[in-house]
Length: 141
Image 1 (tube, rainbow, N blue to C red):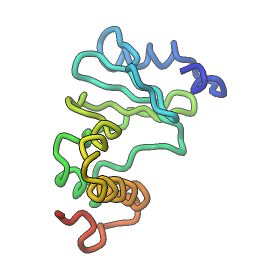
Image 2 (cartoon, rainbow, N blue to C red):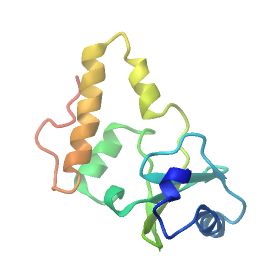
Image 3 (cartoon, helix red, strand yellow):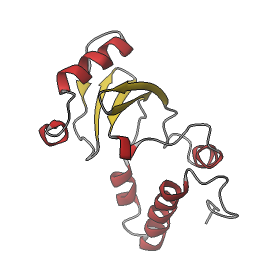
Image 4 (tube, one colour):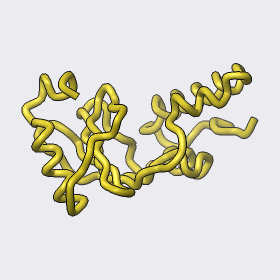
């Protein structure tokens, strides 16, 4: 976490206070932090602070809606909560289950499917702002 805040004008304590105001009580940082975000949790709620170059997609984007429908329980339905300093703030429900790195391990004995999953997610991230998904983008395999 120190590395994330080292070049920011906003401190971890300020982010924690912002999240506590959103969630109505004390928050705790999650155990594994992202490289471009700071994430805290309170019960079933997550608040994430993200660098401007690493924002989450518009939840009304058609491609995001397709991806969410195709992957229920894997994509959090987030809402934007403004900014603090240069950080975008998002609030979302805590998803139960495995994270993406652990999901990849589920396919350890199926390397082709593992690469397809990674490709689907990478393609989604690369194209999420460009309109509707191409035909067959998230086709069932």
